[in-house]
Length: 501
Ligand SMILES: [Zn+2]
Image (tube, rainbow, N blue to C red):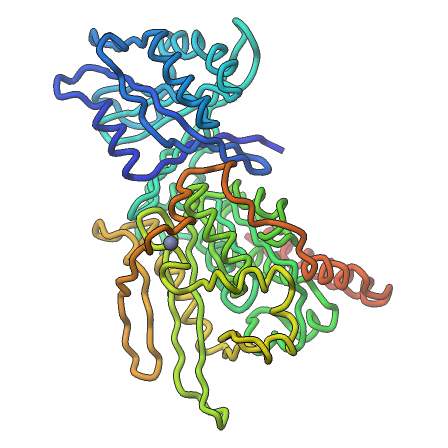
């Protein structure tokens, strides 16, 4: 497995760094910052938390800029007290694009890499700002010792604000060749935007009625690195909403991620894409670590516990989460009264799911104890939750459409507008409202911005996930054989499609 490195920061942090690094006199400048690591299964990100302001004499500016040992030591001490690492940042005035390292850049960073790692226990992160188009480049000085110390160049640098802005290292992850199959997509937002969007690693949590639809559409748009996570299997009761799943899938107790894989690979338009599946829950430690490898997450789950974990990750690990859901109200007679669907990007600068009223923190503990799977408990409990949430396919597609529109606004910024804020659609009156939710005082989720690996631990043993995985694996030999035949036929079909191309 390729181990990748990355850097992420909020737009506010970026602005603070730019004001330090870009000088009116056009000379190069530098500064130090501290970061927290966010460690996934195959990626380590440095989350920039705070600028360590230089004092007089801490750096010399003479066309180029040089840093003093005293400044580095002060930053390392500050970092050590806060379980952080040190980042050394400098600017390349007038430059654009991901910057290769000059000899003096490399020499300077290498000369402090050992010292910083010894003092903080974390690798020095070097960063360069190409000031002309605000492109960042970065590396982690994480290998070798002494004079042989060396760096791993980052795959990307992510800035999370009204939109997600990503600087790409084309040598680590080259832009893909453009395909005729995406010509309509390219004509909508252009080749440069497409080369950026398709390289972002995106996770869809939940392969139900909304998640499956979202996942397939991302594959059709040409995304190269997609993951879907769900532990559930297809059942007869899912078929009225799970478009793409068949009676045979329900009969074979096929895991939903297998259906998602099948449908996404059939729809994919990129030449060399990679679709990964995981039967973990985001509430399990391994599921969370996998999520930390991604640049953006879709939350397509309706349970409080997984939503609480995703809500936390959006702030603590600076991975934006696009979330949505639907609630259908009925009269006592059982007839439909109204339906409401909502969508929002959860990220620093926007209220979290608890503050915007989409997550009842009191229900998280009940969900962890498995009590929300107990119809008797729900009937007797003082909760708004119903044993079965009403939902219909013609309306659930609106949730998928709404979260995908949030994703496009947040990723593409049409006419310079990023994500629109929390949206709510009332079906009975057909009215769309931009909600003005604000952060509540003392919101712990939002206060944990950039906490990285020091985030509050919300994961644990997930008994329902264990049970479902067990059910999926414990099918009889006949069903296993039929699944195998079905998989083989599907794989043959996909291969034939590729050959025909
Ligand atoms: Zn909040």
